[in-house]
Image (cartoon, rainbow, N blue to C red; front, side, top):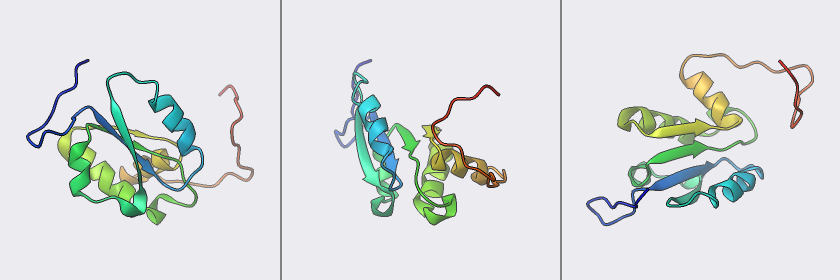
Length: 120
């Protein structure tokens, strides 16, 4: 896959990794480093600007503490992806935000489960 540029000369094979203050974000960074032909940026959710979203072809919403509404930049990214047809992936908190954005409900488990594989 060749790299292309937009009208401003910027690379358009860009991935935005929205960092919602979670250490697991850097496990995602390690995976992104292995993708040939793509560039990625890690941007803290509180530092994201709407104009910056136009520089990216795909958006990854990282895990994070708290609830989706604690990170308003997530909803901004989701709406931007819908409006522009960009690829979007939510991981943990990011996935919860997608659920809420599209009308789903979240509930807490009596005993949270992290990093365990179970057949469902």
